[in-house]
Length: 452
Image (cartoon, rainbow, N blue to C red; front, side, top):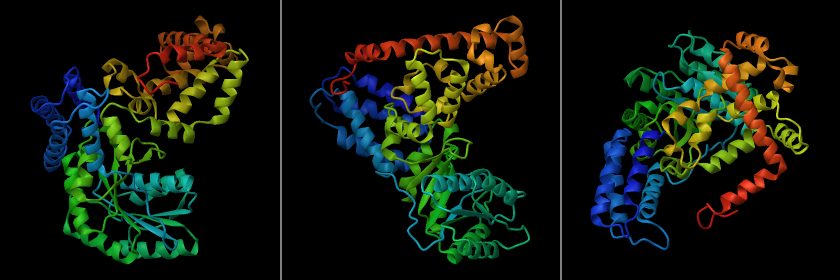
């Protein structure tokens, strides 16, 4: 998300470099670029206007403080305003109610409500150790109930069985009674959507809201709908006492306009963003971190949190000990690293959080995809344990067998062998103190105040 916006804003800052003061003219030029970038990102027009006006007022005549360049000073103003319009700080779910706390999911058909229900259930189960039950009140969409049942089974939470012949209100009341008897902490209610906002849908969900009295009413919206996301959210906000928004499919949206528009248009906080198909791909929304990512400064805090949560630390320590003892970095080790990367959302997700990611060449970004990782894992899985441990034995006939077993070409095996050899060589250097040398050489290149 935000690739196009980051690129345009990055060019704007470059144009300001080398100038001693932020003047009316260079701010005017920069703001023209920012306005175009925001409009191309499909940010709602009223939001663009207010954002530009505020940035202009704050930036005009601002002296460059200390060692800050005009570009950096301007970026700080833009960063502060982006954070402000997206909500200042992250807002979590308020589940401080008599159990079961009810969460009502609302939104249009195809927005990702059912998948988001499963993702949220998994997050509450794993991170907050809550006993979660889910129920589907969608009696209109074929297989909607079956879909949620499967998702509930996949993430390991309780599922309340409903039938298409029942009314949504009867299902909801029965599910709430059952959740109380089962001592569930949280009941997540997945509701029916429509292709567009209509009176029947709104009446139905209003009735559900009145009957269940949920502690959280979350509006689920597809981020790829751009400005329409904010408009739809506003309509739901007028009909329901919304407490927050879940933005879905953010991994497929290079613009990011919805994220910048929803909070300001609706007055409701974005609480979570869905960033992938996997059930674990639901992240808390942090306006400051998102603003940092938009401006090409990365999101190192989220990256560190992901490493702490999703990396298998026992495997990491085992590999570290292995390298310290001077043992070879074999194919099984490489596969473990690839699988860890997948657990963290894939290569593209990791790169997106690194500072300067927007400035990477397009070719590098295109190569950073999960398809390559999956292919590499398939190739290694097609090797025998002996071949994984001693890759040097993989010659002609073995290469052909592995290629056939993994559905790739022999050239792909050769490419992997070369990559593995390079990684193995790098690991040996690091084990012999090469990491310390590398850090020392980087020391002189770091900006002031960022030394190690």
